[in-house]
Image: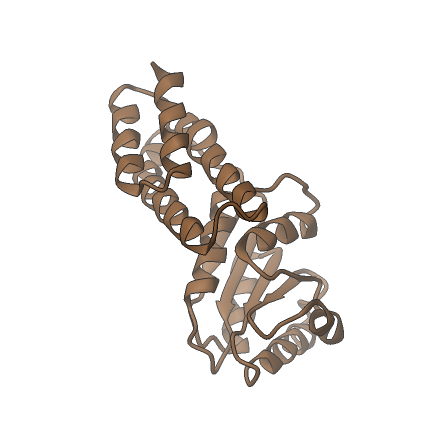
Length: 219
């Protein structure tokens, strides 16, 4: 019974049915399926398949958004069950992510944050219009290993450079890997400002983050 419902959860993620994903998660819990198994053997395989289909051009951004929504709702339901059993999901790394100061674009950044969470990262999403001081404070607070800087405007992409410099001045640059992205951002720009990584979409961001923390498995 457990294997059957876990396969159904995976399929519901791949098919983009968030209501069904949540319903099946509830059914699995009612059937005493281990919450960690629901996450590891039901939800995550679905996200990996969606990520692969996106990479191959079979799926597009709307498919990613719907799958991420399903994942987010299901994991929110699992969190209290995991806590009650003292089960802890081992994080691949800790990521601070936000859209830089002066920029209020959110959809792409939020999708990256969700995909990173789905692939085992502990993600602290600072939102939009985030000043350098807030990134620095959160790195100090959490001991983050990766900082993700999103910019969707040519007028704000230069702030990515400023934040990298602010991290250096604060003595934190050697402690974190900086990943940049956004519509006007390129790998050449990332190299120019001294970023450690660059990705042009959410699936690429997962691969890049895993590379930066020394892992290779990605959605």
